[in-house]
Amino acid sequence: MLGGMALLWRWRARRKAAGLDEARPNLVMGSNVQVCWEKFCRYWQVEPRYVPMVPGRLHLRGAEAAAQCDENTIGVVAIMGSTMDGSYEPVLEISQALDQLQADHGHDVPVHVDGASGGFVAPFLQPHLEWDFRVPRVASINASGHKYGLVYPGVGWILWRSPDALPDDLVFRVNYLGGEMPTFALNFSRPGAQVAAQYYNFVRLGHEGYRHVQQTCRDIALHLSGEIAKIGPFELLTEGRDLPVFAFKLRDDVTAYSVFDLSERLRMRGWQVPAYTFPADLTSTAVMRIVIRNGFSLDLANLLLDDLRKHVKILEHHPQIQPPPEIQQMRRSFKH
Image (tube, rainbow, N blue to C red; front, side, top):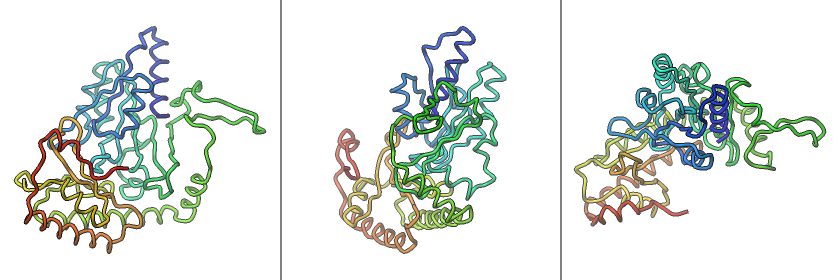
């Protein structure tokens, strides 16, 4: 949200300086974004322009992003690690499409990279991939320490390319703690334990330690996805080669049971493997997703495979009567 606020404030300042209307800001992103971006648009009254998912394109691409932009676009959000399937959006391609848009129409649209997960994976596993400030149009990047940063929940990070990318009137300065301190946040007093834990991991693991942890996670993800592809009824949508996260679905000819049935049976064995439908325009596609984190060992992966094979056989021998579509859409893998 802080990154979105900076984009909005910069757009307003440009429009005001040019004597133009500031009433209709919009933000371009794929329909696969995390819910925080929906919250940002609603809370700050920014029009969300979603690029829908289609068969063969499960995330935002350059041409589709540029087609949604106009003079009121405050920015484009590119995701390094889609919530839906773990794939990276092509930040460089999106930026180049926006370069062409500016050359053709004069619209200078910045990019914010949502690296909530990939921000702590790509630097260690794909160091040559250009997605960060090596791409000139990238104005800001956020990352979550509590995902692949290996810290418990409650810490997140955001970086801006330069001081100019963070409008000064968003920053407050207080001196009642014994010295002037700048602050830019949406919450108030918070514990510092997560920050200390993040610092400890940086010092303890270092670059090579993080690389080893993330590489192990990806190796296990690739092992799991490869074995699942061999089971028979499944079709992989991703393999876990970007984030150690992958999604898979039942083949179209499998109608005796659904991914919701399989998710429910796995939960009986203690596994939480979510089943859900994709967002627009692929709401008819239901998938399962597996996220590999530090601590999920190869032994655990093989136990999951054993249970998956077992319950696929059970469902094949005991077909499930599927509810009508309006009820099927209400099914959930579990409730919090």
